[in-house]
Amino acid sequence: MEQFISILRTDLEKGVGARLDSLLGQCMYFGLSFSRVGCDFRGLLADVFQKAAVEQFTHSAAVANEK
Image (cartoon, rainbow, N blue to C red; front, side):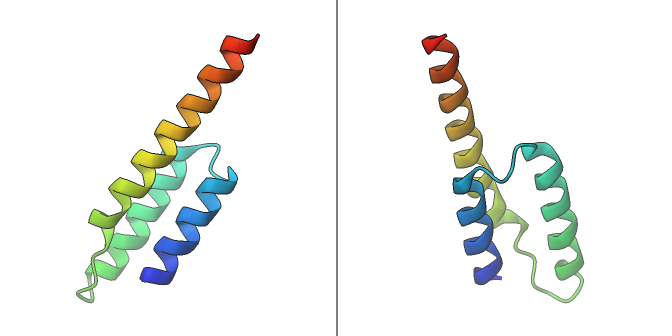
């Protein structure tokens, strides 16, 4: 679980998640699968995706401001 969150965080920082909504949905479904065996990590995803959304918005606003 910690390794998945770490890899997800690293990939989002690299800009892999252009479609955050789709990626969040897939991660939530993955977390739901693990919740069936008592390892629900979906609550940990909120901070990761919130940070990625803010960074993506900040970057987009900076690019728009330059243009």
